[in-house]
Image (cartoon, rainbow, N blue to C red; front, top):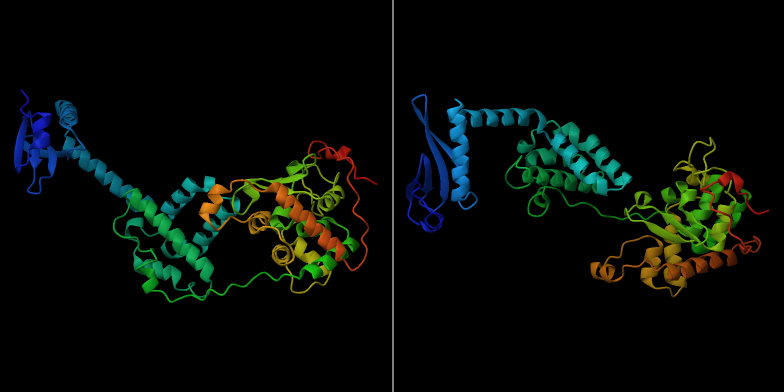
Length: 418
């Protein structure tokens, strides 16, 4: 007959061993920690098998565990030997698979579904180039501060931005490994109160992208008319929309809503991983109409007609026009400067036009829309400014009286207006 009751197990506050019967024992330590032990005899030897602690393991569950082991013993199986064998197998696996590289790859597989393609590639590239050659083969449990310094010291001052990102990525991998009980103790890659005392202070000089003045941008937009080709049209579209190089070069017809006059860039192609709507003005649509019918999928087709223009195609256009000190991304800075200095449009409207995340979390929480109508007015003002400040008359932008059908469905049948 059982001697213990749930109430007794809960209330007992005297150190000692308390028998429940048939080998099940409740042990209470000097610190009043309560643990369950199953005692049994096998081959004339006594064994004490730890089952767990109370209250995580209740009296009822402890009895069930003991019953399970009694069945094993009746079959001639030694529970203690089986447990030791399992631990040995786990330790053996740890020496071969629980390396830093294996843990990092597991972390990437777990989280990459929520990352952009670019962010995923950056993780892979930075770890492969700077981390795996140094500590990739180390057991995750043994990576220490000296190992982290071996990774970071050669690149800390040379490529500070990348070095900081690598430190953070190592810290995340080690935190995940600790959560999986693959390592213990403090994280040797943590910054505050640890590596900040061991690494020199970095120079955080911000070098902005070279960008032209708004009036020079208007001149450049006019000069682009003299060039043929998809890359030149892509530069025009980038200037008018104030979007990023890769967003323009990879633009697809399926993203264009002719009826609503919207370019919907999917989350997978955005830097922040969030879909972005761009209001299309008549000037932007004029550029698109020049590309209609050239390919079923890509708006700005490469010269081999195999896919979109490459990432450096727009920069080559600027080189062809002998535009010094300007890169395609710089047009975004030009637009933002013009919007701040020459217009009365609200700051959040200008930031959303650039697909920037609002700095204030409170502001972002309350402002969940994308201010499309206000951004449309802003982009129309930008287009009018560029047209008005062009050094030569480019001709009036024709009104689009009838939108062409969506070329994503059958572009071969859609021809640009004469």
